[in-house]
Length: 601
Image (cartoon, rainbow, N blue to C red; front, side, top):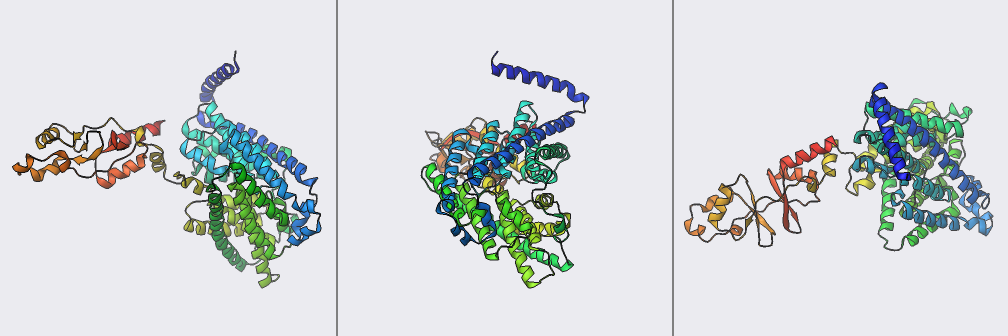
């Protein structure tokens, strides 16, 4: 028996067993929770593999060849001049090589594994009911490990979300779950991935609900919560139960709001972070557009991107990789000049944009935290200079800046607040986090309707934040609902022939076509009224003399566009045109019928 037939038979046996067990254990809701737990367990294990891969690659590539790399995080850029030439220019070799390897690997095995990872999952949820190829998961895991480990300026949230979501989708396809449940299982994988890699189960749940699925529902909530908890517990059992950013107990009491008026400082920080969020997103896509518009071989683009990022890393190695060490140092009170902090924020944004533009694979979540930490710390230094001894240390402002920039770029304030709370394990900062995150989101949404994730999709014509009925009509096309062409009239038809056609049919508008079936316009009884009493005109009039313009649709037009045409022109039927010829007809009831079929599928 072949492996395919064996797998198919095993699948049928499991589905039959599931159908029998499901009524005994509480129905499909319990089954979804069980699947969520299984997805959380496997995703948590894969997240651990991802973390170890990053550590191994980082150790092989950097620790032996550039042992003093992390020393620079506490010094000025000029300190790099103190090392030997090979050590100084080492990033100029490693980062381009990493980019070339990763882009080749992704193009060869799974092109959809390139980029952020999160927008690709959102697109699958919005347009394919959550169906994702399992191959994308393992390709993303390996590619992002190499890209980040070899200095690419990206984060690990995108990879773990795409890996977990692909796993959830594979489970859903294997067990033939309903379309709505498929989205839930994709959310389970995303939540478990975030929870496992950042030790943040609550943040994982909110990330999945706020960003991936986009809605809160009780049927989705329970499986996603279980998946997130199981993913976090799985990772904790292997990696340990430490927060992503460790803060000693002695610092907890001072990383808070020292006086009530200090909340005003976080208001200013939140408003500024909102503006920076818009700039971060626009710069990211602006640089990507420059690379996309560069019509050359992919290897040249990838190599050039690697050289640019590596060149920045020669003088500021803090921008390479995730930058986790530099962020941790700031939270612990390490003092860096405010000019260096702002320079790091700008160059980290550029490095992230260039890495993505060159075809890199990784997320933008950690880079946004890095930029927020740098700007927040610089702002904290300014507050300390103005009000010495009366405000919290710069680490508090760095943490608030991280939450604010994440919330502003992702348009997800709850995720920003609770994820940073869990990652720092410091409840005393919850008020500053709430203040800065909510204000940053308000400013960002007011200036840019799309988040850093949804902008990529809206540029492709995919709008994930629409009402469900509107989104469904946008996904369906006229070709899915049209019927055969309505009865037409030749442009050369005489007046009496036209009247016979109109009186002998229940059709209101008749498309008028030429001998090659090209549409000329339409005719109705209203168009003939003025000629009925003009007997001398009736003898010479032909159809093309009486036509009126008519709106048309193409087979690839969306049903949303068709519905808008019906409403705008108050018509009942619209001809469907392809290459100038009438190929079908669409009525209002055809749109409603297709919409109903899609809801039932």
